[in-house]
Amino acid sequence: MSLIDPVLSEILVCPADHGSLDEDVPGSRLICTRCGRSYPVRDGIPVMLLEENERGEDD
Ligand SMILES: [Zn+2]
Image 1 (cartoon, rainbow, N blue to C red):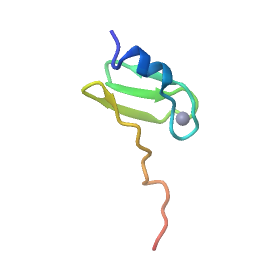
Image 2: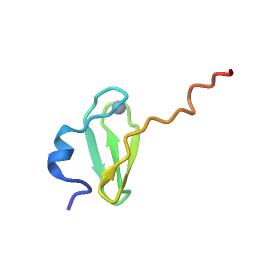
Image 3: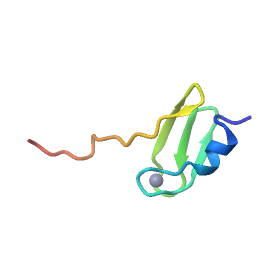
């Protein structure tokens, strides 16, 4: 059992550092093996968005 298409899983990398991703099937998400960021998978589609909360810039 896998969260996403194995072909898709082969080509997907972490958008932050291009690390490889592990599937967390019970948690329905992908976890980067390098930086530990996690990305939710919704209906088989991984949501590869970086959170922008860390910037802390004022404009
Ligand atoms: Zn990463």
